[in-house]
Length: 156
Image 1 (tube, rainbow, N blue to C red):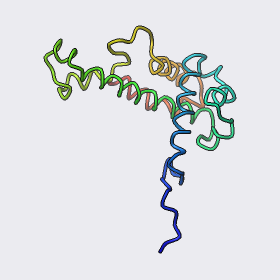
Image 2 (tube, rainbow, N blue to C red):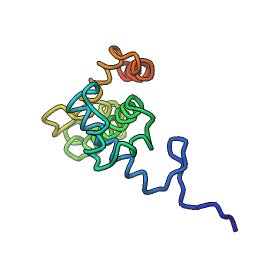
Image 3 (cartoon, rainbow, N blue to C red):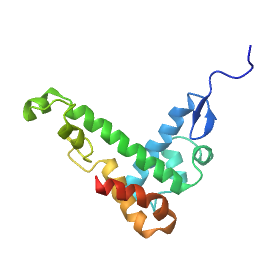
């Protein structure tokens, strides 16, 4: 019988307890909200930690610095928006209006759009994407890691 713990998962190259994933997502959601509201330059780790009801140390447990957190938050926000769009575009209302099933290539392309359906304002994903565009060309620390991702998004 092995002494290896069985309740460990590998996340971001580190061994973690499965329930810690919720903490990471909580931090990412807090970072998205803070950056969308205040912008990258004015977002502070202490404020992000407070939004998540966690400590700044918890942020550093997951992310090396603010730039790495920003990149992860951007990716997470875009995935959340994509999932939200996919759900909306799979509704009967959309199928009836377009005549396309959710698997149709036009619908799949539409899921990449920053907003869908019932969104009446800019989404956090839109706001953080705009912030990524700003910082990628303004801040040398952010430029290198974000430029290729932003360029890829713009090509889509």
